[in-house]
Length: 474
Image 1 (tube, rainbow, N blue to C red):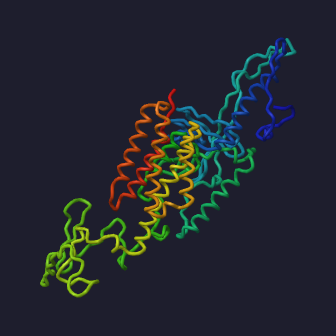
Image 2: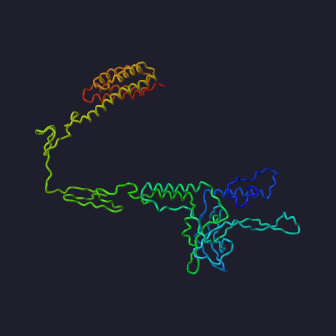
């Protein structure tokens, strides 16, 4: 600590000092005190700003006694606390007969029901030894050799300050209003930590222990309100709290359907949370549960039999109407009754656009893949394929099926010439795959059916793929 700093100022933010050691340095009492202060004050600063104050552990078994006109307290299990200055208050187990004092420091002979008890940090000196530096050789002088970090138990009629931490119970019903309440609440908590908290010589540097209560034959310490002032949790405890909350799928926040805008009724039938909605079978209807999570709704028959129908086979028109069939028969749609010409105009246009896209893609992938081959092999036949196919794309040869087939026949011959020119320059496997794709393209061009154009376009896409897989020999 800097010279001239008083006891209260040491809990304010300041620069820390510690010894700089060197051979021959004269060490005085002040140097050793500075070394201890550096360690203690840094630890207190971390405790005060990162952890806060309150009971850390223990203090479950406490007994009050009245003996010799004064009230004492026994700590059977002991405990540990931090005051607002960051100082540790350690109470050993089996600490018996600790005097309870008032704010003026005097012991008390009685504790009114509802009195508040606090722990207060109080260091004291022990282990007096002779001082070798006494200037008088005729008079022996003793000084304390130990500083013990002890504590006091102080009674007060003043309740502890609320820490502002707890579960909210006054949330409104609407989601937007809830969000505003939470936002305001969190903003207030954040603003409270903008400035660094201080610690002075007042009730703030004491830790709330419990409330005195009267019982038959004596006094007790009521700790029901103490837990809300215990704010210390280990990382393991915080993880467990978070884990329990995230794995709670039973609506832990009690969210209602109106808050989330969820469906509450079907056809004016209200829901029944955690309950049941009955299904009632009407006339000629049966409701059964053939298996778990299954409901079967079936007809049980009735006075009016269903109409008997028969198939008219593949005949498109029955009777005198060409749009409607009689009520005693159905068309067999599984035998190619519906062909392309009977589809709607919109659906026909969509299919035509899809087929044209396949032809266009076949030509464009030829341009891009053979351009890459030309850049790799510097093969003039590959460049010629790029040029003629690019002209076909620009002329929109893909829009007409006949033009597309005619161009593809010429393109096949050009690609075969290209294949002959690279034979022996590429790996056997890549060349064999490329040649197989050309042979399949020829097979598709030789067929003569309605699907030939589509199959040719698809196979040319296959040729493009194996073109990109051609590899020069190493």
